[in-house]
Length: 184
Image (cartoon, rainbow, N blue to C red):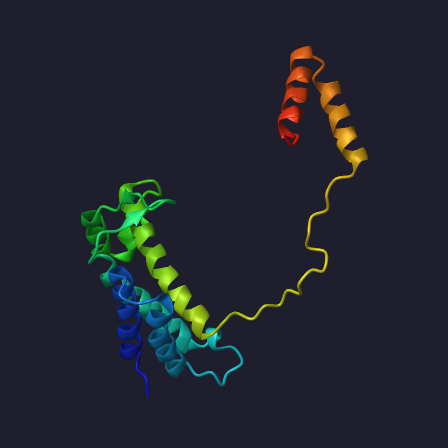
């Protein structure tokens, strides 16, 4: 029988291996997925709705916070801005009420949000691998975007010309069209 502690250890191992880049994602996640599947009963209609799944998620995210503070981290879209780990440790030691009182644009809140995002992303990868979300959407047969008709293109050009009667703008339009034409 898998306990919550065993599941936490498997997920923490995933995060630590991810930091060290010692194994591929599939290898890292497989043990944690197996532990999650063993911990959460699958015989119910939706394992993601069980109390065990929610408890596991909360517990794992708390355990991942400790992994987060062990290594230097970066935030931002391109992951170029370093996270101030001293601030993260200070925020981690705050009470929930103190964290809730933080202003939305302060460094402490940004550091806390970066840590929560890290924890959520690792948990999401493991949870999605263990219990994929059922898709209810049907694939659309007409998913491709249709090209505009020549009449629609001419109507758009006429509208542009009506709105911009200046000769410079019209010349600019024709210069742009000339640039788009393939060169022979």
